[in-house]
Each structure stands twice: as structure tokens, then as C-alpha cells.
Length: 349
Image 1 (cartoon, rainbow, N blue to C red):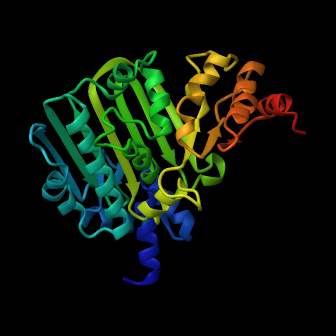
Image 2: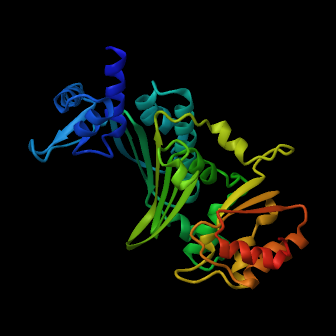
Image 3: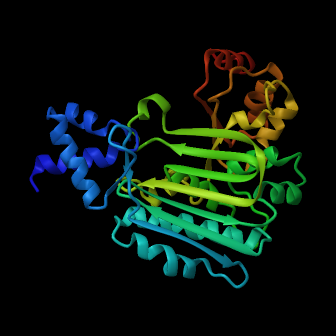
């Protein structure tokens, strides 16, 4: 296979998900070749089992064909997460780059262990699918639900309050055996990390290896309220097989230079609000600030926050800072209205 053919095939495989109907046209334009030539490359990938084709000639769609596909349901009693990884999932991923394999191993075993120790369920369903472009894994239990469990154990207002606390990290219902770091770090290692439980679907997207990086920044947080109730908890993790991220890089990103351990956190501020409520009160600020004293540095992401009230800003950026001078708080992705209010309460220009 010559270099040009290799580049064309890689382009098709990397872009077919975004162009299922017109991948031949897009490829022809990209490499200045005829549509017939581009189609021959697509047909070859179908024949080799890298792509699938669906539909008639005029309405044909193409997609990445799974190179491996697994679904198993297992009893949670006496289950060991490392054995589940070794017996079921690792054999499907064995030839992937070491950084991807390490991330998958960490995320999968952490999520299975959470189900074993916290879910109060009886069954675990695992799935893993691998294509040329990505690895996607899912861990689902039939337990009480992660947000319900956190709400109950910590006496929180509702499942949304549970999500806010969970997003900060260092939250566990079993401090003797867990540090509360697994979900936080796993969500940062994968390109997509989704929790589905109850009526809530929460997704963290990491765009550092994406084409639209400049538009969306490093991270995006998506919150969806579903009409249908999801029993138990499902965790979905997805990562591009060409990602250059390493697990150690993610750990290091949340460790300050002069300290050891998980000392820096990153919190999406919009989770402090409920529905269409604006962030105006000191009680909302105190909900956001809860457990900040276990960190040395907090990055507050104001994406999706249109405005904040004087009382909210004062509690976060003046009162808390005066009471905790050793803790640094840095706001990011603030619009002009939010910046103006922060300057107002701090006296900064």
C-alpha cells in the first residue's frame, strides 16, 4: 500500500461517522481525485470489514464496522473488577496503544468497582465495542442509582444537588475503602463520559483531541433531564484510538506542583442553579462552595452562566476568599456580565 492510499483510507475511516452518505464526495474533494476513485477506496474498506454499507445505491450509508463487540450480564455478588477486565474486555483491546489500554483499564475497573461496592444492586451488564476510530465501554447496574445514593447518604436536597457534589470530586459514601476520585479522573481521561441514572443524563466531553477544539475549548458539560426514569446507573465511556492522552497526564493536571494528590478541581458552576433559576443568592453560593476546603485550588467554569447576582458573587469571591486565604479560586469562561459582577464585589479593576 503506497503512502497516498494509506492517507486516503485513514481519512475515510476518520470521517465516515460525520459523512455517512457523502464520504466518497468528501474524500474526492479532499484528495483531488474522482468520485469513482474515492468510491473504490470505500468499497475496498467495506470488503475488508472496516466499514459497513446499508441501504440501496442511491440512499446508501456507510459506517465504521465494529472490530469487536461484547455484552455480558454478570451477578454482582463476589465479582472482582480486575477479573472482569482481564476475562472479558482486555482481550478485545490488546493491540491498542499502551496509553489507550491504560486509560480503558483504569476507567473500566473503577466503574465496575463502584457498582460492586456502592450500587446495592444484584446484576452488572458490561459492554465494549471497538471500531477503527474509537473504543466505547458501558457499565450498568440495577441498583439504587448513583444520584439517589449520594442524596441519601449526604442528606442533600435532590439528585441535582448530588450531581453538583459529584462533579467536584473527592466524594465517596465509603471513606474507609474509597477516595472518591475514580469518577472525576475517569471522566477527564475519556473523550466522552456519560452518567445515566434516574431522570438525569450528565455528560463530560473532552475536546483536546477533536477537530473543533478551538470552538469548544477543552471541556464541555451537558445536562439532560429525561422523561423516562432510568433504574440503576449506566456509565458510558468513549475514547478515540488515536488519542495521545495518558492517565498520568490527567492525574498531574489536578495536582499542584508543590503538593501530592488530588488538590486542584474543576467545577461547572451552572450545576449550582436549578432549572431556569439565576445564580443570585448566598445559599446558592454556599451550595457551590461546599467541600472546597478539601482542595487548594478550584477552577470555576462559568460556561452556560449568563449572569450572577451580587450576593452570590460576594459570597464566592470575597467572603470565602477572606475566610480561606490559602485556597485559590479562578473563574474561567466568564462573559462580560459575570466579569463585571466579580470586579464589583472584589474591587478589582
